[in-house]
Image (tube, rainbow, N blue to C red; front, side):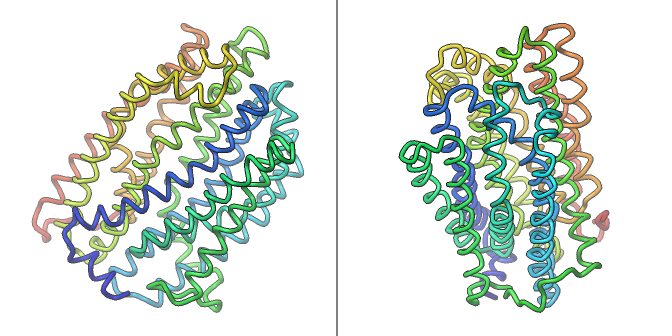
Length: 460
């Protein structure tokens, strides 16, 4: 394991990034397949209202994911930093605490949601047509949520210590099982959306089991020791500080989805059209989650390189990794934007044969995605600051698009352009927030190019 850690500080950055990012990309793509496979089978087997119902689960999943990333992302970044500083005992504390706090959170939060599920669904914009499907799906999926977050948390820790292949193996096993079980439960047992939920729960359980096996079998740089599975207040505060940025971003994503649902209610001619737009949004979010996993995998491959070398004060390698990721991310985003503009129709057809929903989704997809080419460097920049423990600036930059720009535009644009204005709010906020974040990113690259004595201390 020491050789693997040594490579983070000595191996050529391009080959190291490729070694860590490709398994991470595969793992993230596989992770996104959970939702894609569910929506594909639900769309073809259960119809438009079922797609809208499952789409209504997104705010709940975003809230739970916010607490998951608060611990998981913060723990992963801190683990890389501690390994770079050669503080192995503290690294073990990070791993044990990650498991302890995730278990506490995800044995309590889903129960609270289940107690008030219908009230939450109505508050989050459920239409009468979609409400029964949303209720059925969420009542099942929430029971297995603890396995989901334990598996994602440990997979992130594996990546953070440079074991991207093992992290990928965890996610692949669960995704394969989910792909097999979905058609069996949905069509074979005629369980509909309930079958999709049960398939996901069982797949997540298998992923968590494999991740635990790796950590308990001595196959990792940092062992999972049961005496460390508890809360360490000093370490927890540092984890929260680093994880606060993605936590707020995930919460904001849930709030943005609720805002979209309510604005569709307000500006659509009736609840049927509102349900249609919510279903289109569900398909679009599902596809984008799949398309942007290569980008997420790239930044996750960058994270251990940046975190380790920043902890070891090898700043030229930090700059090289950051600059290379920014270039690659921009290329990925440009390519994805072209693909969406050209193939929005065929992509949407994979999820539905309903001609009205197909036409609506194709049109909305192009509106919503036309400025995604600009967001590559901003995504890398936020993850860069998160990886080096600079929580304050990461929070501000991560909130730039969702909180400071997108939400106000969702409320303002439909006054002038109706439902079309709701969809146009996305690309305008993409462009404006990217300009601001790019300025910050280029300044950081210039600072990293200075001699070490001129480097300033991180803001934690």
